[in-house]
Image: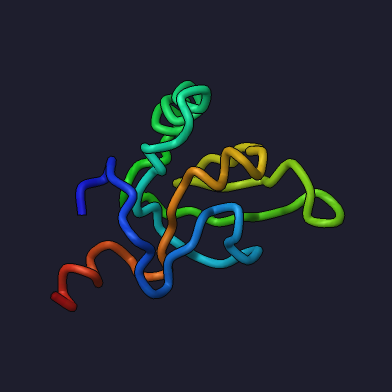
Length: 102
């Protein structure tokens, strides 16, 4: 799957906003058909490292499941709003395991 096209979710995939706390996952894609006003957010996500294959984990959430989320991508931790995290598709299977299963 090309990294810039959001396809139908596969088993074990969800948005980063819905990822349970402290669960290992890997970036699959960004939701590139997002609304025009979110294009800057998509660019920022790419620039800070939300690239396909990168390990990602939600390390904390604000009380009552609100904003922001503390998210680790690679070795860096960022605060993201839920609407920003919803633009990132993640999967529970490491990228190499997908190729081996095919």
